[in-house]
Amino acid sequence: MHTLISTHYTTIVSFALATVFVFLGVIFLGKKQDSKLNWAIFYSFLYVAVTLPIANYLCIKFDFWQFSAEGLNSVQLPYDLYFIWTILWSVIPVFFFKGRYILPIAIFSFWLDVLMMPQLEKIGILTLNDNWMVGELILIIFVLLPSYFWAFCSYHNKNHGVRALLQVLVMGCIFLVGLPFILEIYGLIDPFKLHSAPFTLQFLIIIVFPSLIAVWDLVKKGNGTPFPYDPTENLVQTGVYAYIRNPIQWSFTFMFIPLSIYYESFYLLLGSVISVAYAFGVSDHQEYADMQLRFGEDWKNYKSNVPKWRFLWKPKAIPVGKIYFDANCNQCSQLSKWFSSSKAINLNIESSSDFPKKTILQATYIDHNGLEYKSVNAIACCLEHINLAYATLGWFMRLPIINPILQMIIDTMEFGENNENCEVE
Image (spheres, rainbow, N blue to C red):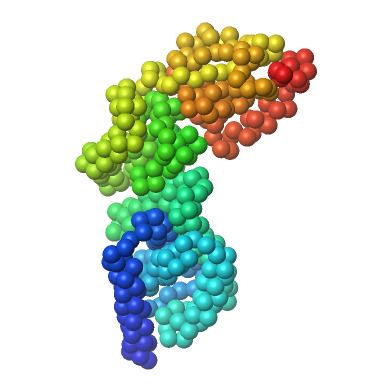
């Protein structure tokens, strides 16, 4: 019986693998290649390849199903099935539909799995438990849908914020989940042992924090994403980028230190070594040439004034920004005086009467690209003109979750004698 199951499994998987490789050869070895489509396929494939083994591992831990085929590995998913599954959920739908019809594709994939999973159980590839459809829905929601939506956003050049969020999520899964798991497989660390979590977690957050703000600025100010092959349209010189040239590379390099402390393993420090080697050996050459081509003299000046591997204390080359305060508002006047005495660099403090538009309802900051920031965001941007300590406070104020809370608090407060004191007609 075991021999018969093994024969069926080998035959089915061998045929599926052959079909997949023929399909990949046809679409990627053809003379006419659509680079936009290829990148959309790559992003979808990357997301599924990273998240599928994690989600499947959790489904097995929650007792939705178990694979029983030969070649089972530490993630409880045979490599051949893992590869076929990844192609079916990423390359094939993106190639044929280019990110369209996301809900019909999700429904069809769920229906197909409902038909196929019991058939795989019959030939002994896996064992399904009573609630296995719940696990299937989890995979559809957290693996298939985000990967396909990423492909859609990439192909149609939409939703930079979603694309950046998925990039951060994938990289976090690789290095915060995948890497420790691989080391655990080889007995190099014990991920389930209770370590000095509070200290190392705080240390990790401090190191990662600048890169998160940098990602946010690349989306909002640069109109792009952190991935070098999904670049920004504008050169970002404010925010974290006024203090260090590549905050994401800096965070990525040094985040392995708290990880190494937490897992009590020097092996994780190899991540820092590899990151530095990649920066000097690969990314610098590609990035500098690309940035010079896209931004010319602006990039050259920025590169000469802002270091790559250390933070400046003062943002000596931050572009000029303007903040407009209402002189008739007591609180605004106090803020205006405070910023005037703060020795802020390249910050012009103006009266609301000189505001270029008709009305101004709140303190307004305008950066060198003409982007406007109101109220809490305006004050946060001004703090970035003073020094690294105040800038860090400003970055905290601009965090996606913290910022709306602060704004709600400000909106409930009355400035001046009545609510209209900060309004200039």
